[in-house]
Image 1: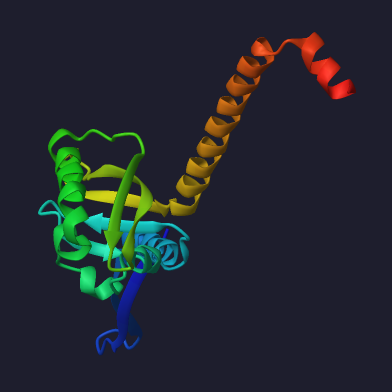
Image 2: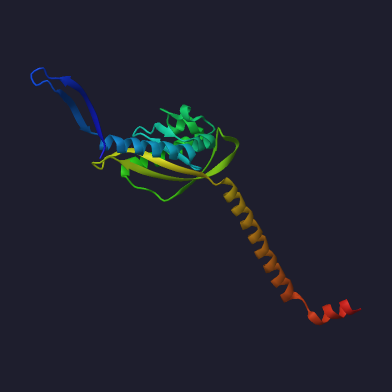
Amino acid sequence: RWFAIRGRIEHDASHGAPVLIGVARDVEEEHSLQGDRAVLDGLFAVAPVGLALLDTDLRYVRVNPALAAMNGVPPGEHLGRRPGDVLGSGGAEVERLLRHVLETGERPSELRLDMATDGHPAAPHSFAASVFPLADEHGRIVAVGALVREITEAVRAQAGHDRVLSQTRLLAQVSQALDASLDYDRTLAAVAD
């Protein structure tokens, strides 16, 4: 256990010996919280995905550098603002999703959001977001958390794959139709001549 001890030595004139007067206080919980805070600070500093904590008014309380880069807004400029203030037109949809989590306590499956941000204003980008309620020790929802990944390249690659697959299927259908319509004897005779 961790204790904080403060004291001083007094000289007792009646006994002639020094006396220690002090107070010992159990600080195990405070020490644990400081460790938890250090871990949380480290996680927010280095996480390669976007992390955010928002209060019950849907105002950003904490944002990590990865999410700030995705949004194109420095971390400090998020604080105290709502997603609609930071994300532009896409912010209203984000706020609706966050409000639903706060009101119901439900944790929806990962959501895909397509929107332009200040970080990517030229074209909409795709994001995978997980949002979740955060409750206190009494079970009351006191905040909402978000984990966000940029998935634009994966979405574009999948779209390209889908186009190639569709074209391949069309070519297979055309090939079958041509195969069914050919007269093999006439075709072989024409090729032989």
